[in-house]
Length: 148
Image (cartoon, rainbow, N blue to C red; front, top):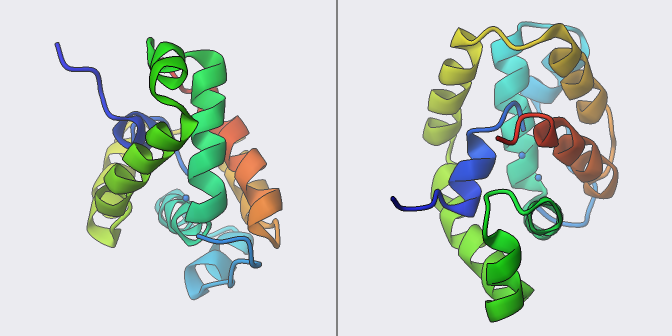
């Protein structure tokens, strides 16, 4: 059985997305979420924000997954091949998994499972963060709760 990719495992977690160390721009979708619009829009903007923060998000995500050994074996792979190799692999997968089309499909799937109100509220809280450096730890904390 093939182990899921790092980015796929991430994507299957919950509402989550970020692209450089500069403050992320507030998009119209981000603005909507701050005012409490629907959960699907929050999901979309959350993943898009992770994409905007990719340079901060992917290394932090890989580090958290290695620390938790989720998926199983990633800590061993980190020791054998190095963190840079894992981050490079995750970035390759993320390029495909973070397209608007992929995000939309994932959010459709997430919304069919009726996310917990606590997740929605934390998602809104994360989206209120002005920089990727503040958003990313919040987003990873949210997704960690859903790692299997």
